Image 1 (cartoon, protein in one colour):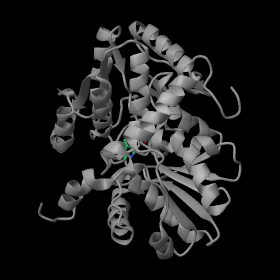
Image 2 (image 1 turned 60 degrees about the vertical axis):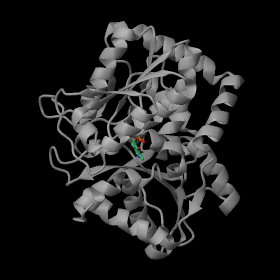
Image 3 (image 1 turned 135 degrees about the horizontal axis):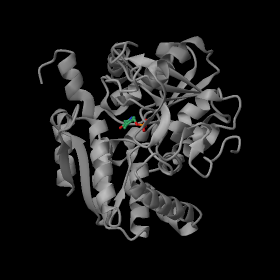
Image 4 (image 1 turned 45 degrees about the vertical axis):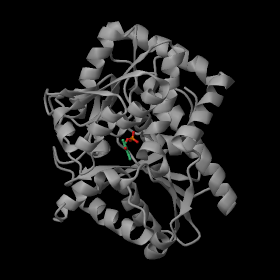
Length: 399
Ligand SMILES: *Cc1c(COP(=O)(O)O)cnc(C)c1O
């Protein structure tokens, strides 16, 4: 493998990643890889992709100087990469558009997806409506209750939302059901996976569709500050918004990059989703990576105030760069996140998603210890409108 580039032919980033699926899916994954690599080198595909990312999703997103947050911290300058301003409210639409275009190229007419909080489901429903594709979204029935508004959004845009009643009735079970559907309907159906996770080629492909974030940020900071930033910070669920920001900067040796995981109630078994704090090497849902598991290898329960970070495993490319010392990882607890969610809303007039707030917690800690001539870019992966009801409830406001 090259220094910082592509996975090997079996989809490994070093020791991590790979393909762990039933044999019936091997052909589909190989076809997908072939189609994707062809599309990637096709200027027509790239042009179509950029045009929809601009016209439908609203790219480029702003790089915004958070002046009052910077002043509040008293140190390094803090910039927000405003992925929260994209259509449907988060970075997820970047990948959904790319995979929908690929679906059309493969001549498939049906799309399936998994969703946890509903953000990826909403993005997928939107692109399927736009491109005239049939759309089925699998969602744990517990998540459907918690995120009723996103279920309605998906249905409004013509998607069928199928509740999953197995196990904990959340994201992991929804992915299992989506895989089962895919095995059965693989000739007509493309599975739009929502993060830089799963079997090859998904981690690589999803990363590529999000790498526009870092490309824009690099150009924007150069225009604005005439130099590159000192640090990049992003939250890490599966890892797609983080690798989307980081990828363009990986070969800049002097830029520190930090991925921030969900510390939940603290690092005790079952109380968090910080895979690099409490996890070890394992295989989950098609991918070898850091997994939260008990000594017998059973998947641990996870917890986070933010549903988008609440998953027991992390994207393989992050595991690889962590091992190489290229990306550092930290975590933020629910309490820190709730405090910063309110602070940033109050002093910047921007309500961040709870996921993105994990990155803000860490960026503020760093800004306080760095001098005023330093620059930090934080990926504001999504907006917090989806979270206000939950936060109001936690804080004891009547809603
Ligand atoms: C889904 C989501 C995340 C987590 O997913 P990644 O693949 O790790 O980026 C982060 N932020 C927002 C707003 C999300 O919707």
